[in-house]
Length: 571
Image (cartoon, rainbow, N blue to C red; front, side, top):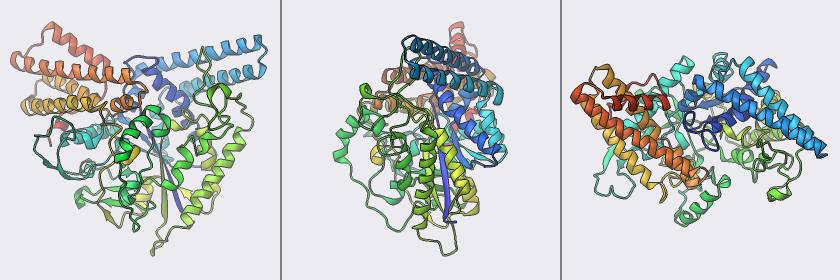
């Protein structure tokens, strides 16, 4: 046995359930459930039935779990799937009438696909996607990890209490949904900041004095979470791989403005991505490990330009037929434009997936075989983290590729699948590493989330953080149930305001208007609720308008019912 492979899947969507439907809103959630989360469950349960434990490390962000567990989701999802089935039937009739028999067969394929998704959701998983994942973990087949409550971008948050709150709320939410403490977590955007004398990196804050801050790992450890992940350049130096550039033209243009200023860190030769390490500044009481994304294997999977998803046989993501939005064309070629895409043919797909899965096993085994062997016989581990939505949503055949990968790994004598928690338990780190600041975004730093188009959002976030800190200090010990109720909703709005998705969607232009609108909605609601806090403190009564506004906010943002406002007390 040469070593192990740890596939890590990060599942996340911003809170959209009660904020629009299409083209931006709840249908993002519906799409990902139909194309990724349910197919992923199908693959895992099929493997278990065949006697193979998938051993995937799967991150489900707290805000995603809140949406999937909301009773309103089940009805909305059924309506969505019924529409997809109806559209496929209409497409099939249209294609048959016009003599397009092969395309009609594909429309029937889509009809059967969504009928299967609906059956799995309602019958196999009892309308509970979170519960289905929980069962897999309870039976020891996967490991579920947590994240910041709303995917807040930790290095740019102004107050340490905000980082602490994001992690603590996320942990409490995990315990609510999964009945145990999380072992590991995904730092949002793999963004890390060590402890140092910090000043806000935005215009207008130049006069703010620098202050010493603890590293992100301190708050991970404080919340009893044992490990997180970083990108390879934070450990090894050199040029950052980046993750999102190939998908978004707007990001390419933004990167062109910044690329000339990008200077890679010097490379380190004495460390390897094939091991776990202790994060440098934690004490024994808060010691935290980290795993590192392996650069040698990741590109092979997530890149549509260089990797498996770009195979000409696979379903093309971009070209769709309306009405219905079903896809009937294949990739055809990496540089082929939409007008020249050829019809999709399901027949060769399974053989291609099996071939690529076996190729990947060989790639991992070869990589491990060339790595230095620890003198104690300690096995190496290839950590391969991806956005879960790559599998199924972006790459339709992706979940089935994972199925064939798990089967091939099960047969392999050179490499085996392992969850990160299992590896950490069996092989705790021997080395302490001081990490630099950075993320897995292009350039390895913060520019996707902090640039000329998003800087204004951070001024609002920082004002809200200061207000929350002030109001908690002033009223946080108030035992009045109504005061605590208002402060709790204030906290929810702050967490939603801090979501890194708003800056990401603005920078990529993928849903810029929606992101700006949502950001300002949460900012406005936070500010009004802050005023209500002070009015209630003075009068101990809510007037009709304030009571109605509080109820409205609770109705449209009903997340984290377990939220404890005391998480904002420390800094």
